[in-house]
Image: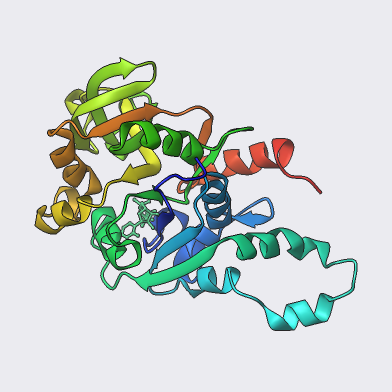
Length: 278
Ligand code: UTP
């Protein structure tokens, strides 16, 4: 994994987060704390663990707290220097030494596909990872992204992380179908964005972890707006899938939908009991 071609991770973080209103009126959803850390920091840690050091963040209006979080707060540093409170900053300091952050803004929120296309300027012509920070993933040894990077090193094509969801929830996700070529690895031949249960090709839902090959940008440029009038990454991925160039991966570990209040509360309880160290 050390010499993996995946050097950058894109964080689309421009969405409105309406399910968390009123909190998200003036605060980015990605800064919601699960115990003592904002969601996006968990995502950055997962990327670092996968050997990725370039963090490319697509932000939007009202999202400046994300940039401030990964910057030095001189006043605070000065205030607590030499005190016993300094240890509370050691984890984020270490992270900032290991990661390089770059930012761009999505001016109009025209969907996840559009947010990813906006990130092209930060990614360039290389394969890259995508993390939707509101999907919080946990595995005690190997994070979902490192599992996927390992898979990419072997298969060299786009990969989406999937999990089985109840049939009556398919309308919340991109849903895939295909042939299982190895245990937990499916060559995708169909994908539908937010299908009704009766229209869903399976109950395998795409969660917020992707590895994408850079030709996805040209495909996105020519993909028409899809469901909800938004540019959907699922529609662009279908073009690659029909050429046999997309795998779905049943990841190992747990995933919490922190974009919804129940999922967020579940994550907070789980992380407090199992992950948080005082
Ligand atoms: P969501 O579907 O969760 O939308 O986007 P949202 O706006 O964040 O939340 P709700 O549904 O209004 O509560 C999935 C991911 O895509 C990003 C979001 O920030 C989130 O990480 N996104 C979505 C963008 O960056 N830009 C967009 O135009 C849309």
